[in-house]
Amino acid sequence: MSIPSHTTPYFPIMLHIGKGAVLVVGGGEVAANKVHLLRGIDIQVHVVCPTLCSSLRSLARRGEITHIATPIHPQNFIPLLKTSPYRLVYLATNDHALNATLTALCEEHNLLACAVDNPAISHFITPAIIHRGIVQISISTGGVAPVLARHIRTLIERAIPHGIDSLARFMDTQKERLRKLFPDTKQRSRIWDQFLEGIGAYMARKQHYAQAEQELDKLLNTPHKPRGEVWLVGAGPGDPDLLTLSALRLMQQADVVLYDYLVTPDILNLVRRDAERIPVGKMCHQHTLSQEEINAELIRRAQNGQRVLRLKGGDPFIFGRGGEELKALTDYHIPVRIVPGISAANGCAAYAGIPLTHRDCAHSCLFITGHTKSDTPLTLEDRTISFRNQTIVIYMGLSSLSSICTQLIAHGLPSNWPAAIIEQGTTPDQRVITGTLTTLPDLVTHHHITPPALLIIGKVVQYRISSVLP
Image (cartoon, rainbow, N blue to C red; front, side, top):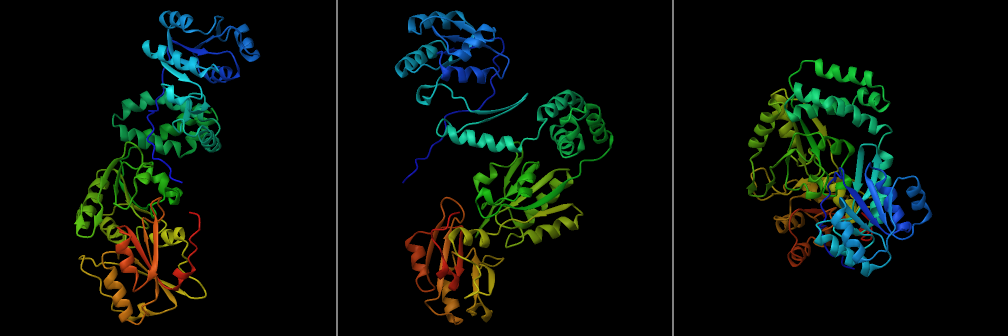
């Protein structure tokens, strides 16, 4: 089954209704659901329908909604649109043709209308909403999968601590003071980050505002120069679900991120929105910045007080040049934090269903880089690479694949020794090609395999389970 690509035409915003009102057309339970949702905010709600269901009648009797008891007809609808201060209109009748006609009338009067359960003719849709006082979170799938949006809402609700509304209100009372003390937005953000990670946020959530303010004062009254630091973080092999919790947390705190070309767009989307993004990817014979220039940029920004995220595909210390960057940074006494990531070898092999070790055939695993520091062809000189009770994983070996296979055969491995190539491992575009040292180069050419690709050689390839779920 093919899944069509879909770019949602909806743009998420928080709309201020102000002194306007919202019109709900319909008097049944569907309309009541929308009315109850709207009552979560302090706005006027008018309901037009000759008769109302019991829950709406109760609201009307208590004066919580305005009931307009008129038949739902285009001729009755136009005067309402002309004379009343409506900002939004919900069409909740069970007549789809009528809803479409009323939607067109709303458009003529520059009003946004939502025909319930019919996003095709609607100007907007209502997302799944989490209300925590002034803290509101909306989740939308663009009308494609509303049940999924509700499921995501449940997951988020579990993660939100009790008292988040009280915390938000406390921060609102303090933001003007911080703005005067610290005009720089990033400096204020850093102070709030420290506050939210400390006891002060807990006190505010419990409505112990005096104690919360004392904790904030400690941060404000401690003279300090912003201290820069660098975080060497592994982004994993491609699937965002393989990020560590530490990596995700630092991605949300960084002032600037220097990232490799192996870091996927889905992972970059998890970086803090206002963080500066600098691509520094290196490919064979194609370097955006040299390693020396990357080191210098990390040092410069840290010395300027920035929190610098160095985001690397896989793990920083497995063919990620993390060791070189660590040495350069510590030579300048810059604080460095290291967050390992799931390596390409582990992640790609697992998603391909290939065990890197197996007690029947592989007692060790050898990681090799496919090209040298100077981008010259790889020469395999150590005869231990021909041991048959091990697995060989070769990073960045696609361009030298034919030479690698020829050298391994020359060192003593059989020509029919199992081998596999994994393209775009752990991503939706992953492809796995299996063969032998003799056949794999031609298979790679036939299937037009392109980087990034990982080469696995050894009997473990024969143990591959192709039906494994990622």
